[in-house]
Length: 160
Image (cartoon, rainbow, N blue to C red):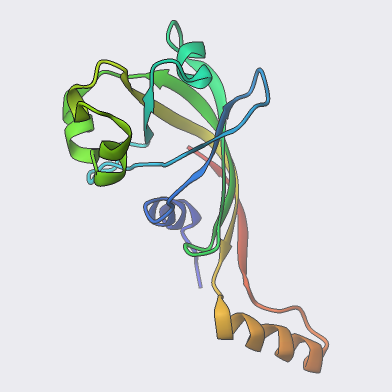
């Protein structure tokens, strides 16, 4: 069976509620909610606020960044490297705007502190789980009984 890890990655990112985003230069990571456009554009979008360190640090120029995902619900575990930049595309903002973002901004999409960040991945180490709950327990039990490794998913190195 041939697996398309890159397509699997993008499908699963769409289900992730939060990950940890940070600049490579300082090593700090902050929780952020990823957003994808319906027509995939190769970017992971974040709605953020002026005054946040990661926002202010990228206001002048794009910066090397990292997005780390450990999401059991989607079965995606990833360390994604790329470039983080500000983007003022109102069409993108309209498309990805949601109730969660609305709760953070008093004036919704018109809030003067709102900033849209675009993360463009360049490479990623990903682990894609194919099991959860009862199936995971079955794989562990089967592995112990048959002295084999459990089939819980696969790992891939991606370039974008």
